[in-house]
Image (cartoon, rainbow, N blue to C red; front, side, top):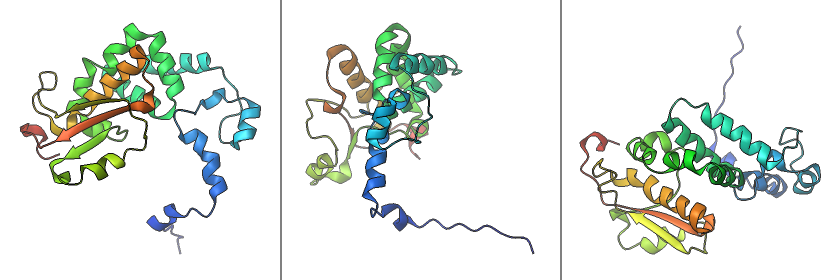
Length: 215
């Protein structure tokens, strides 16, 4: 008889914290603010316990930036470039911000207007990399609990939107989140605000955009 392969996902298995050492070793690679990717030296990799979790080659930050820039330019359109930069922002902030700062004229229209309008309108394609805090009408009476969900305590700048009148696209509701995210990115790049001190908020009261009503 033919052998069959059966696999069952057990959600409880993802909550097993019995191996704290494994969790700690992955922390630096999962923390976008500390993750330097291939720029970790051999000594740093041993100290952080991530030897073997990265390819053996050690690269300078500027080499990683050049590689990321080539990947960015290879994307077929600005929306794909926006998604690429969004992913880079969440995985390697150091590389992301250095790339943007060194290529402001080229990248500014990608991370903010006009491309951010496409990101809002196609939020379902951006959502795998969500950033920000959504406060909905359902949270009435428990907004404090929603705010407590934000992982960073030292917030100094908040930008919020209610999703209305997004770049001429109309009322987009929860899809408007890329607007405060993008504006705060500019404050970090041009104003020196620390990324973890930024809080983008969308006040979701519903919307009247017919094509998005079912999403």
